[in-house]
Amino acid sequence: MTGRTSEPVAAGILGGTGIQAMAGLQVLERIELETPFGPPSAPYVIGLLEGRRVAFLARHGEGHRLLPSELNFRANIYGFKALGAPRILSASAVGSMREDIEPLDVVVIDQFIDRTRHRADTFFGEGVVAHVAFADPVCPALRRTLAQAAREEAPRSHDGGTYLCMEGPQFSTRAESNLYRSWGVDVIGMTNLQEAKLAREAEICYATLALVTDYDCWKVDEEPVTVEAVLDHLRRNADTAQRVLRGALRSLPERRDCACPQALSNAILTAPECIPPATRQRLALLLDRALA
Image 1 (cartoon, rainbow, N blue to C red):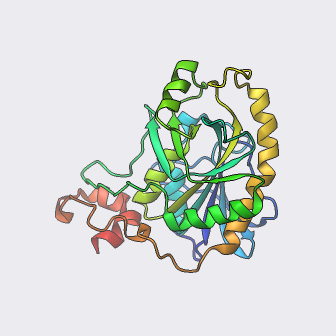
Image 2 (cartoon, rainbow, N blue to C red):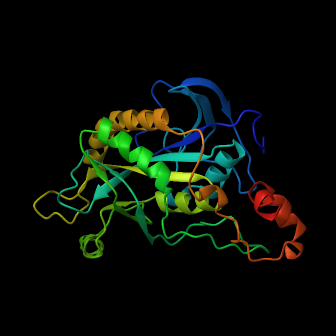
């Protein structure tokens, strides 16, 4: 399947480490998509949650098989676009870079810093040039909805924060961790920035719920982060994430009043007649509205 379903979903949910499924999801079908960028991480699970038709995708594949650098970000986001998702809610494990952001807290991100090296993070190229605005990298309207749900459903939440996206899969050195702290970074993770960029190009609203598992390795009065500690906190964070995401779904407005649906307006610099036919066809799902 490569196109839209007959019934679009109201939202996409990207489940990160520790969130392989959504509790309470009434599963209707599983859809395997083949996109122009290859296969997504896993089949999309289509179902009803809080009265909304949603598409859930396990970011790292079923059984957590994919490293952060192995994720096909373009296929994952394109798949949500093909399913008609106007919004994506993302849940992701992170490390804290601040004393007052404690393990098991949640942070509703509003900014990113890119420290990745090996990742495709645009749909464009091959004869078409587009530059979308990205000063505010998450949708402000969707972020407000997610932040309100976090205040109501999470034990401790933080409204706003900067997420440094590192390459991984190794955790930081102490020197790196201290450098990032000097930049004013709030949390550190390995996945969300490329999703935010691609969602903006696809004119999809995107917001991130960052789930804190550890203090990275900057906090010298604690042991360096271990996989065992992260897994324990992941299990405890999963319930919080499920509650917050369900709360956000309940509060989603029917209409979008943000700039995301028009992100490609005036962003495509290539003259339509100069776009190679093969590229125009491959990106039709993204370009049709903007070039109409």
